[in-house]
Image (cartoon, rainbow, N blue to C red; front, top):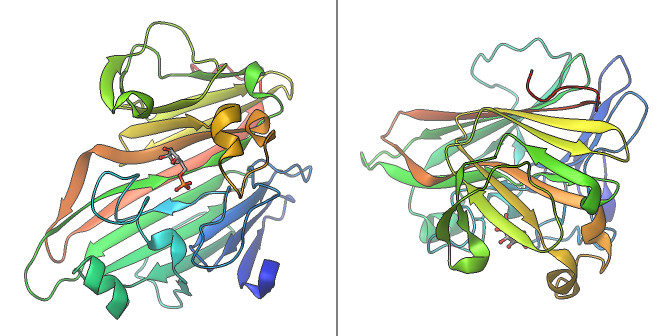
Length: 292
Ligand code: TA6
């Protein structure tokens, strides 16, 4: 169906009532609601749904480059391209009742910037418990025998009631690169992460499960990931928020990015090889012990 500015989008509905919406532009998930109809992702009220600008919020797909770690535009070009619905995907079993398969192949223009051919298949699926599952399958289809190397992130914006009441668990004691200090490497001290200023850290070799506790909403987001060893934690806070035209001055209080990613050790694929990166998001009552 048609979304904002007439952009095509797909709406997924689970029989229990949870929903998700994904725009073909950027294969960009912009909404994930639980079975009470509560929106769990953050999208800025000033988001610009107009190519070639990336939509501010939801789950931007960062490929073939995360951040400015390379020669391409920030976060690569996949989030700024029109994807197609993959009507004939290779067999890929799922127990989801509601999912969509999208595919991106390089345009001539993209081949100028990144001279490789690939098939990037993204499956967005709603699980029976209202979980949101994203699976990326990226295959090198270079005819010239050339391998290629990429970095990647699901740049997920979570909706939170008050950033100063949010904790992130499972990243304690890990090393991270601090984007605010020249990407220098540090070690996280002891306790769960809390937020009182701008943060932009790439945690390295993180566990497969990360928990985001929203105290006020009595809700815990749980990220489960596979093939995505790193996790980026970002909140622009007040000063940086004011510099972003597509982001409200106060919106930093109601969002947190925790991004399942591959940054420290880029992926190299030979022709014919395929990489898979899976992210499963769930939102559970906060009595949930994130240690489970
Ligand atoms: O994921 C954190 C980050 O790399 C920050 O440095 C900040 O630039 C953010 O992504 C947003 O990037 P964007 O290009 O979407 O404005």
